[in-house]
Amino acid sequence: MRILFLSTNRFRIEVVQPMPIGLACVIAGIDENAHAIEVVDLMFSEDPAAELTAALERFRPELVAVSIRNTDNLSHLAPQYFLPEAKQMLDICREVSGAKIVVGGAAFTTVPEALFEYLEPDFGIAGDGEIAFPQLVECIENDTDWSEVPGLVWRANGRVRTNAPAFIEDWNGLRLPRRDLFDLRKYAEVGGASNIVISQGCPMRCHYCDDPHRLGRKQRRKAVEQVIDELEAMSAEASDMPIFFTAPIFNSPASNAKKVCRGIIERGLEIRWTGLIHPAFLDDELAELMQRSGCMAVSLSCDSCSERMLETLRKDITKQQLESAIALLEKHGILYMLTILFGGPGEDRESIDETLDFLRSKKPLMVAFALGIRILPNTALAEMAVEQRLIAADDPLMEPKYYLSPGVEGWARGYLEEVCAERDDWSFSVLEESSDVISEALPPH
Image 1 (cartoon, rainbow, N blue to C red):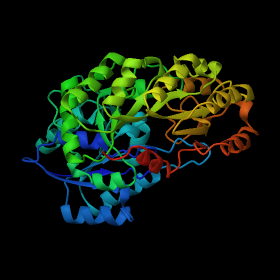
Image 2: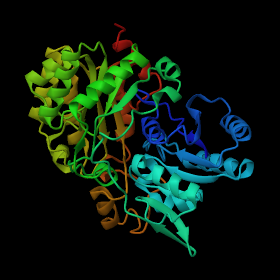
Image 3: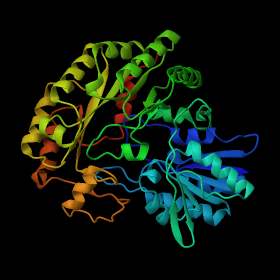
């Protein structure tokens, strides 16, 4: 079977631009001795419609697998909605090719039924495509029943049917992601990173985050030896690119993070890496191991520096833990970035000033401020928004809706614009040039 894999993501306003690791993992499950494979990555395309059309006409696929990473940019102040362009790409697939179309990716897993109705593919896959997609390919090729494929979304007898998704429990039988099918050089040029998935599943309970639903609450980790082997292979592929550890929280648990760092050191890998760190799970030993293993910068998960708002957002950290984590990072020369989400339930002038006062004494690589929190399905924030009659109970939240505390309306935007002028390292949003900041902060070997 000829399979065309399409990555629709073109959103480049990120601190470290990741390559499409999810799609690379899915492709790895397809045997190229049995199937012909072609990849179209639209990230750097100047004319996506023309590029996709040319690939369809040349390759003549029998199946098109479409990955959709984001529905929108999560910005209340400068919103971008990506699904119309994704729909345009699917329309081109139908017009140019008779191939069946299957859609997956993080965005699809977040709102599978609504996206299926909107995009109208033949199939959708929610959850880990590494498990489900090869099964679906086999069913299509052999013309056998696909109704038991995990995470499958399809239409039968006029209605949309959805199977429960499957999550990877054991990575041992999976091949290395097909990073070689993507242009890593271009990602490097925009300050990008080569990703490695080291764990999935999030046990945290953040008020607004859908990771526990989308990825599962149970943490599922790759074996440390497997992580180190993959890092060694990645270093050989692109030795000058920073590596991003894809995990809801790199240092949860801290014991596993220490094993990964020790493995890098013992293997003698000269890599530069970054990831998401939880302040509550950082101690001096781990910070030292991180620095020795090549960690040059991290993103600190806090979202606020107000004690009251930390409790409201259910971050399970205190200001003291955040203070201690920052002190450890600065002690060991590890750069750090923070994203602050203003406007959550109960936010007001007092809590905003508490956060700003805390940050004024710190020396981050960058702090990105956002005003308004995207309401995602299957979250406590969505339940609160329904109770407060901000959204309808049956709203799938495919199109972006935001929570903004009444205590910040009318004044917070102008105020934050003024205070951001105080510091070069404070930004009211994560700007495109931020990727240059991080790439310059991660010098070559």
